[in-house]
Length: 457
Image (cartoon, rainbow, N blue to C red; front, side):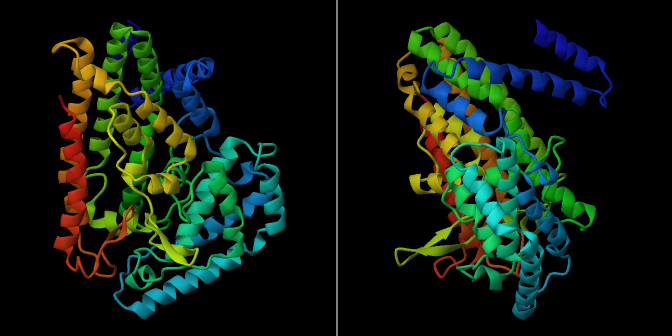
């Protein structure tokens, strides 16, 4: 009744007023979800994992964040250093000259080192050690904002120029300033990741403030079209996850209903999950479009910086890390697990790029999925209908995504080797052409689509 009334009221309001009320309704739903998650945290391991995810995120999802002057004094110099150097990152002047591009990167790195000189490394180490086991002077929101800041500083230092350049892609081990190396192991432990670079959680989910504005821009000072491309591409990750907390709660409740044998309540919860999932995918379709993310600018001014493509020596072996990828987003990990699909990412990559609380929640969903039981139900039963509907929704999404991503990846960028943020450099002796690289990438998307499709009863 309340939901229907809200929709009627929304339809009567001027469009400029609607977003504020929509936000209020969504915020109220999130607050209700957080309260219920807290109240039911001891009910089973899925609720416990979801509660831990929300707690470490600052009592909400996506993560709550603070920045700069809101941090303990020892950390504030990192925020200032990034703000000083950000305007030097991006340029409209695209060069194919290796020496020129190398010099741009080296000049940026020198500037970043100088900007970081105001960091008191001993004070930073002491503060992080004090908060390493249990938060005392840092809140989860402080940690989240700091995670974004240090990760973006490291990506900025790794590339030193936007668009990224071939000569820098060839650099496989980067020596970072001490100021950027000291906090990283603490952040790795805090979030349970092992990569040397950022991930979707650090670079996107923790990089938006309470007004949904990017805090650490990579195209600062550039014309609007560059900055809007960056904003919209980053914001699609945040906007999608902002819709999901009630869905994650419903997933936990559905598992609980099924365990108790209440198939009617289970089917009702599944129907609600499906409605939210459609909203999530509609959000993706709306933002991931040529009008909001022009393909001409996306690869050079949004995607490239989020790659990583370098590594370290571990036990005398070179280990390379990737950057950000949409398959790191919690919603797609959670939906696949809930449907009993195996993870798109291998265990090694999950541990490198997906924070531990997210992994644990997803693992619990997969452990308790009941798809096998649903397959044996009579055709037309409510639970079977809703489960099949969910699978078909994901199949349609993956078909659309496969078609939509190709034109973006096909854009020419001769100043660099072909790469994606999530799979690093793809141009090799075995794949020397753009056509070969695109075919390689398409095979990954096709395999995921095939697995989703084959799971339909």
